[in-house]
Length: 114
Image 1 (cartoon, rainbow, N blue to C red):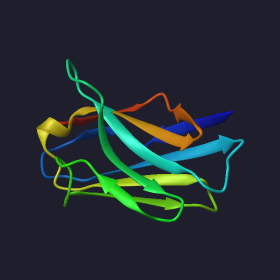
Image 2: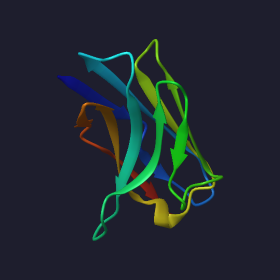
Image 3: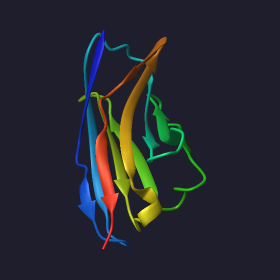
Image 4: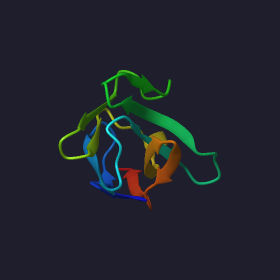
């Protein structure tokens, strides 16, 4: 089993920045993919970004050029640096880990509003 704990969400003004963190614990394989999804009210959950243990990244079209995903394999932690935030980025952000099975965190709320 794997446990994922997100942190770093909150309220930010449009144009601002936030950094999300997700720490994984439990039975973690050396090779896995960690990432972030988000779900806004009334919308489907969508991919924000993901990163393999080798460092290969994938981004959702709506965040390319504004968000950066990174990870520290030694700490089993993934980060999401979010810049130039827009009101439409408001959502609950979920951390995921894929290693055979897919594990989800409980989510952290990001609100972009003036």
